[in-house]
Image (cartoon, rainbow, N blue to C red; front, top):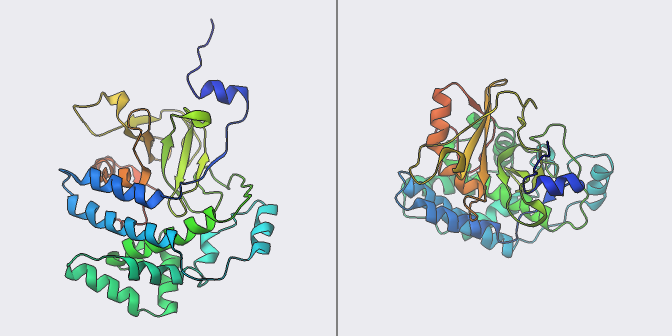
Length: 308
């Protein structure tokens, strides 16, 4: 019997799919617009709008970056030669190149008149370089308990902006797959979510989105990105009268083998969807999956676990 290939499978069958999909230069503007859209009628509307403002500040800093020394090109080339992430978060967070980006973000961010926000911003402004460094190292390594929760969105935003800048401003990157499917080949950070693309040479392919630098890399579909098994995977979504279960724009790929899940965006069902904003707007799905005993291993650097 003949097998009918779906879009994306045809292209993959003809040759290797493109491994990388770099973020657009207006990434943070797109996130801000999407967060504003998703905030309409949302129970977390105020928080989503707060983060939209943070994303707008990120875009301003990315468009007009602070003066800083470029990263060591020799070190980047050496990492590429040995198949290592050239912008490794675990090492660069221990250095101070990113701290100017935090200062620039704090200067550009138009903070709302909220005492808790003002206190968080003042804490970051007044903290010494060593304290900031300790918080950054903890955040990129997933040790959220070592970072005051109120600081996470602003510190995470500064780190994202710096790493996205390094990624987008470094030409001729020849990146290779990391040690695990969920590891970003550019900075070694874990994926935040996955995107099923719907256009051009990426049509029908799954790309994971880095939680830090926003690099996207190809990972085959219907495979757990954590334990790499395919047996028994389920795809769950929030009940929504507007979408049939198999047409929901956002679904969680749930693995019974390791009890972990990863959110996936299906752009054929919502072409304007964006990973970070969709993740923040679907926290109810995380709560439901947590109640069912599944664990989330994908960080969102603008949200401290356990917050709203």
